[in-house]
Image (cartoon, rainbow, N blue to C red; front, side):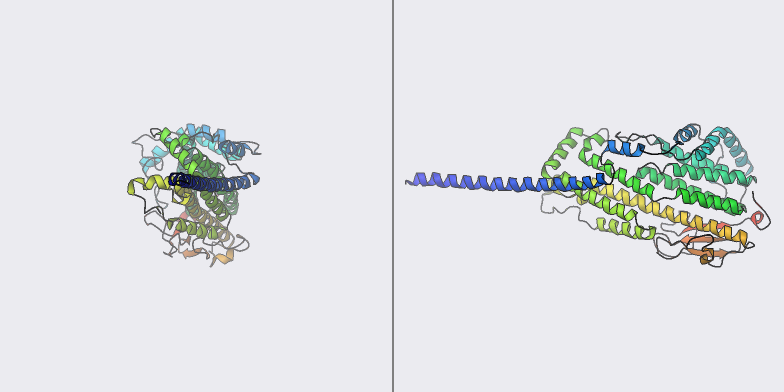
Length: 477
């Protein structure tokens, strides 16, 4: 053989070896992509087996599938339409920048007159809110397939709670304590009406409304001596409106919505952004397997999150905190060797979901909402304990219990735990009242200082300071 022939043969051999190596690499890559796809589909199949949605259309069907006989949503929405802001110069508290007078102070004359006129002008809205509470469960109409969800009723619901809280405070100041009591119940029902809607923003708004309602209950107990019947009605309302299922349902729907966003980010892109560029980037991520890795990590984290939500409140707080800290320790850019101009594109194409900012934001939003919800659930426990203390006081000659264990089993099944410390809630007896409190998320006992927002991590407290008119002998109906 000539040297030229040998050289050609050697060249063909190297070409063949190169083609074999390329085929092996492509085969391995295709196998890896199929393995990722199979894992994602396995996760989604398990979700469907639990009768939970994985698509936007599925959320609609899942949300609408209810056995409620009457829906209070139409009454609430009509009431919301009738609520108007006070005029800029009207000294009406709560619905303007003006705060309510403190519990120990009456309404100033000018504020009292303006508040009375404002409430008289909203008599029809207040009547509808009362009717809605008696109507039963509520499912606000919403289409989850829309890219921009219509949730205007959330801000309207918060205005309605402010209106009812204002009415309760005003009625209490003029001695109409029965109407004040009913308005607080109406406000609690408005807050609970949002809990049926499986969205984190709805749960967050519901929690804000519940916090306002708990403060209204605190004012009620400080201003007037309600009888056993009224106190037990409030306890019953709180038990009925307290459910961990609301947050679990929100997690289920948000998971399906976020999967849809990962699958088609251009559909949900804000106006003004380059939709074609987003589609191209997503196609590249789909080709490299980055999209499947992002979905796989997100679905795994949300499953861990759902299991955490099913835990008792104290364990839930610890587990979600641990997950949040774990996420914070993840290196967000492991491609230090890549030249700076190419770092972000390489990360978008090849990094897992735990390193992508948009996917991390999805998980962090779940952590943030649930930790805020835990704080509200803690306030819920404090309010329930305070009502039980008031019941004890009615049956024991105005005497306060020495310890919270004295409330068991007549008024409480057990002494509730502080979810932030894992110990019993704290209780302080005072000369003209009492306070029950949690140490809050800093887990430091600050003596039950009122949670007025002035501190970054104050104790979460429910304090009752009786007025002279609410002492023994002043019976309330």
